[in-house]
Amino acid sequence: MSLKPLADRVLIKPDAAEQKTASGLYIASNAQEKPQRGTVIAVGAGKMNDKGERMPLDVHEGDVVIYGKFGGNEIKVDGEDYLLMRADDIYAVVE
Image 1 (cartoon, rainbow, N blue to C red):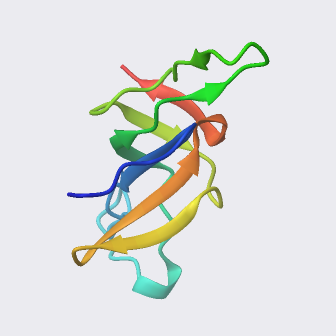
Image 2 (cartoon, rainbow, N blue to C red):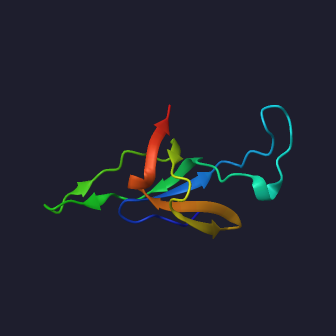
Image 3 (tube, rainbow, N blue to C red):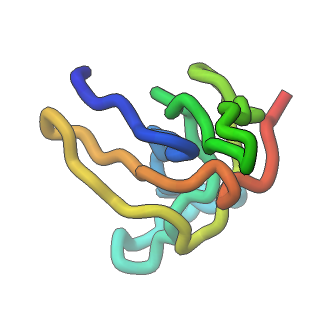
């Protein structure tokens, strides 16, 4: 991939939407909720602080993260769907 986020931006590959309920029923595609979990594909270098120093981000490539349902911008690269969002819109790293 030839996409490098700038500053405090993070590129995320969202997990697939749930297609079945816990009891085994299939969910119609128009009723499926947007996933709030995904894998970090690329990160920017970080924001600049008041002193002109880079502030490193808390997430790294390969981290599985939880983010807001409506955060970020949906983009398509090489036929794949991704989210490009600020690191501040990420709520947690799954360990």
